[in-house]
Amino acid sequence: MAETRVIRVMAVDDHPLMMAGIVGEINAQTDMRIVAQASDGDEAVGLFRNHRPDVTLMDIRMPKVNGIAAISSIRQEYPHARIVVLTTSAGDVQILRAFKAGAMGYLLKNLLRTELVETIRLVYNGHKRIPAEIAQQIAEHAADDSITTRELDVLRRVANGNSNKIIASDLNISEYTVKNHLKSILSKLNASDRTHAVMIALKRGFLDM
Image (cartoon, rainbow, N blue to C red; front, top):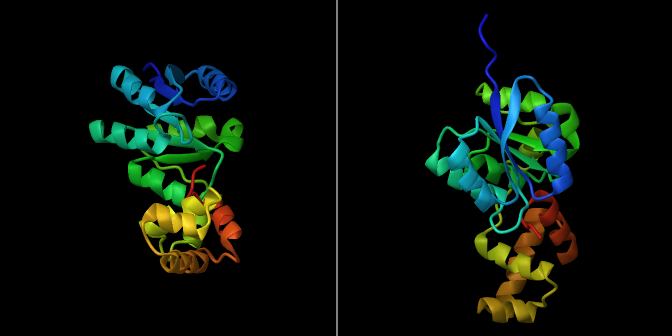
């Protein structure tokens, strides 16, 4: 009888309690084990080189280097790396960035207890894993006009509480241009005012604060 292949997993998360729960759940399985643990994206890239895990669980919001940047770095060196994003956010923009970076799965942290182990097995066997609610969010905004880089520059400064005058000075543009950018942002996000626009941008993942 052939021996069962053990899936080697690396977990990347900067929250100790979350990490402990992930490690305990995975090491309780007979067909998988944790081979490395990292608390930021930079550390994750180094540990991936050393351990070459079969599946990597990657948090997005971390200090130093975030999860999406770490995914990009790992996939550039190891194109066949299998990475699952773990996050508390289901913003469609953030999701698309993660998949463009090379993620094969996306899992909300509130679903870890019920779906973590099965997601690891699916991704290990070469399948992608996108929960239905996340696929729906992507579909809902598929036809939306994209926010430009300059509009994001303006939106970040609005989120930090800056006035149009300060934003204009920071970006070396006129207040009139700032107002035009804001008008475009409100239209694209279907927002009623600048505060509402920031709330939508945070929820969808345009901004990460």
